[in-house]
Image 1 (cartoon, rainbow, N blue to C red):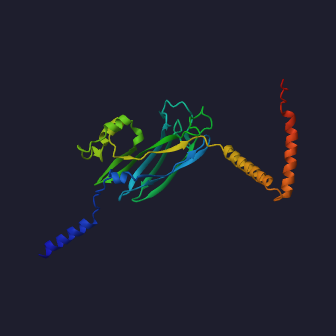
Image 2 (cartoon, one colour):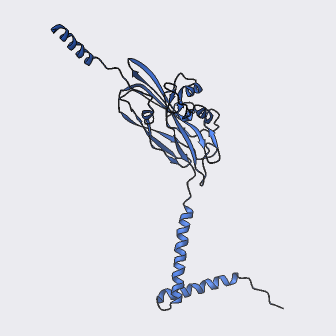
Image 3 (cartoon, rainbow, N blue to C red):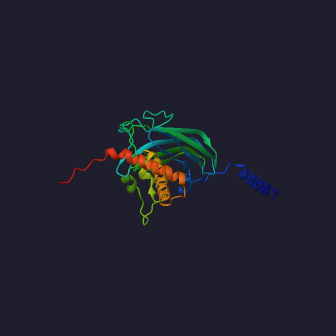
Length: 287
């Protein structure tokens, strides 16, 4: 009896020492939604630059490796129009500072490993142009936005197999493609084809890639002409002017309250009357 007991004990110890197979679901919607968290997006005047701040969060219990995150400006939109910012975009701006892509509208970040639960603060600077010939932008009363999409890839271990995962933003698809990949509530499909109510296998086919494991959020930044300050200052000056006039008329209606001001105002009115009198046109005599 002693030998079987020792063998069983050895088997239990060996099982405890062996590395456990990972049951991590890297495409879990609740985890994918939080992979990219936007911290701050700039609102820019034409010609200004601003920083887009965000976090890459590892929402997994296992570390991920060979991480590559790509951000790109892909669309310009106002209330009246929506235009793709792609190879046919005729303008030099907007740009991303330090971009090595040919159009300077892409930003790339890589990391050999991101630990479980790690949150990395990331950012890049957006450059704009002052002139509308170099970049369209909104007017004083019309907001314009440029949209930014993300493409994230990394290696994760499922069981004993290292698998390449891919998460992309909505901005990589047209509205028609997104609608086609929607899954009706009454007829859901199962993994690995669908996540939530989206057919990710169909979306992968639209992009010509072998798989998509999740959808991460887009973001945007605004560019428009700032409201000029001179009307505000003019209103202040006019308000002060009419306030002074109201006080002078009050002094005029209440003689003796402020005799010095009353005397000055009477002289000033007389000078104004003498100055304006020659400018008035004389009416021709009747008859």
